[in-house]
Every structure is written in structure tokens, then in C-alpha cells.
Amino acid sequence: MTFDTLQIHYGELSTKGENRIQFIRKLVHNVRVALKQFDVEVKGTRDHILVQIGHNSVEKLVARLQEVSGIQRISLVAKTGKDINEIKEAALSLIEQEKGKTFKIDTKRSDKTYPLDSYGICVAVADHILDYSSWEVDLHNPDVLMKISLRQEGCFLSCHDYPGAGGYPLGMNGKVTMLLSGGIDSPVAAYALLRRGLLVDCLHFASPPYTQMAVLDKLKDICAKLNVYQNDIRIQVVPFTKLQEAIYKYVPEPYCITIMRRMMVRIAEKVAKKNHCLAIATGESIGQVASQTLESMIAINEVTNFPVLRPLAVLDKLSIIDTSKKIGTYEISIRPYEDCCTIFKPKKPKTKPRIDECEKYEALFDYAPLVDEAVEGITNIYISEGKEVKE
Ligand code: ATP
Ligand code: MG
Image (tube, rainbow, N blue to C red):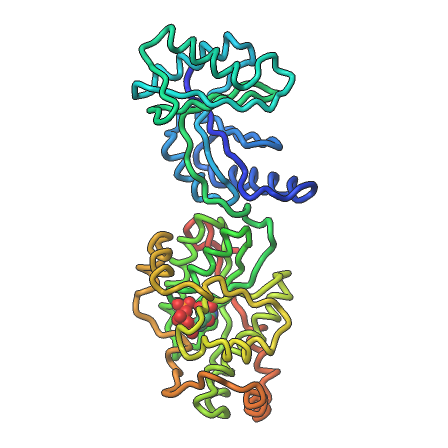
């Protein structure tokens, strides 16, 4: 008898009924996709997902599963029949393969028809181990904690648990249009959304020749890193130059950034609607720069009824940087580049823009056709499993 199976415990599965079925279905699918390269059998039930380890390394399988959101915990388990003698033999054989001197048994019995209660099972198994090995019981600080879970379909034994990423299975909560720049913040914001079970569909504003094609390489590399969490990612590149030139021609400099952001949101909303996305998301963080004050956010939000998600709104820069290092986007984000925001950066941006002023300046030029033209001019880049692919 050896530990030959990984048992996946569901994450925030507080929801019931149809939602629960959805959660499980999505997670089983996502686990299969994540473990594609391993050639393993994955079986989902209403209580857990079981993955047969086969000839694979447990560490590698666990490490990959820890990147999948919606998993609360992973246990390394062996399954036996429900006969108490069979359980006792299995427990003895399994503990003999562990390192240490002391053990404790912890039993959960969801099959309430079983002749022994949890305490009875603990005693029977512990006695057997004490009789036939040199292991000793330590209830407070055991070297090995053996968990026994008696279920309808059989008995699961385990000595090793690994934490999962938590959150919801990807795709469970819909799709979001993510405004992705080449900076540090927006990839971290995208990661936060992915963790919550939201798929991201990226949108990038490019202003050639002011911004270089090199930015697109950065974005591709960033999305390749995010592919760990979402297998296929699209980057929609918006030709933004004409609109941006018009803004800088007609709008007084302190208002340029605010108006530019309002145009971005107008475009993002149209794109989101077209692609059945339920929200727009950005990497903004309150107070980080002049355009990210609450007053600015009010002025920017005013042009849309769509929810604008800002997963980083209240995080500090250091924790954002930590996360970007963890997910591998930091080194890519700090490569020098020119963003459409930095190119046209005003010397003294308005930190408390007024909506009536925004409207006054926007009335100075006919921006609606330029917005439509930008949307129509979008080109797509597809990144899948770490590489650019054709559609
Ligand atoms: P980031 O590190 O994500 O670039 P930032 O701190 O540099 O953020 P800004 O440049 O003010 O802040 O941008 C705020 C947010 O606006 C970004 O996080 C991103 O969501 C969006 N954004 C900015 N520039 C672009 C762009 N060229 N294309 C798409 N989205 C953009
Ligand atoms: Mg930026």
C-alpha cells in the first residue's frame, strides 16, 4: 500500500445548488487543462477531485495544482475498502513508510452507518500500529498526523497536506476587459482577477510612432507568464494615436490625462460589450499618481455605467511589487518602455479634475467618430501556453 492519489478539496464552495455544480465542473475542467502535460486520470465528484499520480513526481503535480484557483487543499492519499481490518493494515503499512517516531490518528466519518464511530476507528487503528511497530502515540505534537476519512465509497488515509491557492475556478465568475499597460501594476491586477475566477480579455492602447513596438513584446511576455493561470489570453491592441493627438491639440494640458482616461474607458466599454465582458478592470491604486486620486476616478468613471474593477485600489506599492515578482512579471515590467501615458505626460496634471470642465473640453472636438475608429482598428494578439499563436 502506498500513497498513490492526490485528493483535491474544493475552495470557497459555500455556494449551493446550481452554483456548486458549476464550481465543480469548471474546476475539474481547469485541473485537466493544468495537468495536460502529465498524462494523469482526473475524476471529479461532489466532494473532491481525485488525481491518480501514476509515474509522475508528487512535488511537480502539487506545484502545478497550487497554481490552479478554486483549490483549498491537496492531500496525498491512499484509498482502501471499508473493512476495519483492511484499514488497520493499510494504516500500518503507510506509517512504516513515513519518517518519525510518534503519530496521531484523526478520523472523520461521513458514512454514519459505519459500525464504529470516529473514536472507535482511531483506537482500533492506533492499537494495531502500536502492536506491530515501534511507533508511539503523541496526541499533542506528533511527527505524523494520519487522517482517516471514512466515506460512502471507501476509506481515505493521508499523512500529507498541501495548501491550495483558494479563490474560485477560472471562468466561474465571467469575463472582464482588462486594461493592460506594460507597467508593474496592471499584470498584478490581472492576476488578482484570475484568482477570483474571472477570465481576462486584455486591451492595450498603443500610440505609434510615439510608443514603440517593443511594448507589444513586453505585453506578450507578460501574458505568457499569466498563461500559467489562464491558458489562452488575447491582447487587443487599440490604435490610439489619432485620438491622443486630438486630445493634446484641443484640451488644456492639466486635463489631458483625465480626458485621455475617459476616452480609454469609453473605448473599453464598447469593446467589453462586444465581447460579452461584464466589467472593465485597471491596475490603478489610490493616490499612486495624480490621475489616481478618488476625484480623478469619479471624473473617469462618469463616462460609463460599467463596473470598473480596481483590484489594487487599496494595496501599497511594495506588496504589488512582491506579487509581481512572485508571478514573474516584475522583470518584464521594469524593462524601459514608452507608454502612451508617459509620452504625453503633462507637467502639472490636475489632481482634482471637475466633471463639468471635462465635458467643456470634450465639446471642443468631435471625439465620437475617433472613438469608433479606434474600436474598429483593433488588432488581436493571441498568447497560448506561453507562446504567441495565430488565432
Ligand atoms: P501600470 O503599472 O499598470 O502601468 P501605473 O501605475 O503606471 O500602472 P498608469 O500608467 O497611470 O499607472 O495607469 C493606470 C492604469 O491604466 C493601468 O494600470 C492600466 O490598467 C491602465 N493603462 C494605462 N496605460 C495603458 C495603456 N497604454 N493601455 C492599456 N491600459 C493602460
Ligand atoms: Mg503605466
